Length: 231
Image (cartoon, rainbow, N blue to C red; front, side, top):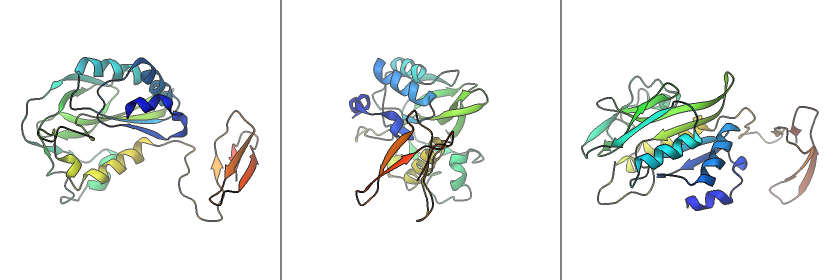
């Protein structure tokens, strides 16, 4: 549940996924804004019971700059995704794969959004409306935290009037995977190593740390000067 967010140390995670969330309270907004500014990744998918103004206020509290203009909920219809030229890195895996399910996914309703100068369209709908937008929080010329906004629910929806069939599409899991892979980019991330290779960790305020291995044995490590930790 969203209420558990305030009990988490967000810096422990490379990404936070807000599934079908329509608004945040003040504390949640501050936590996510700080997390994004410090290099975390945020994926936010709209909820079916959205209050557009509250959503817009919450979004602007988390993501700075001119990113997305929130309009209104569309009328019900039946349209399909339009990936354009598959130009965004998230869609690269779908290029040349017409049977992936992406092009045949039915969308019945969506939040109408418009991309502003600091947002980049990822995926659109037939007719031109973006359905998925990406961006980054900049520190000078370097992006720190990355974000994604999705204008349809990716979580629980009303079963009798779903906004789309995306969560039962064969393209759903691959797109979620590619989305999280893109948004979780952090310079210090090291998620895969071969047995025998060293593990590297970023520098922290403390000069020492402790690692517990899979057998339960604890190991003390000390940071190299300016280089972080090596185990």
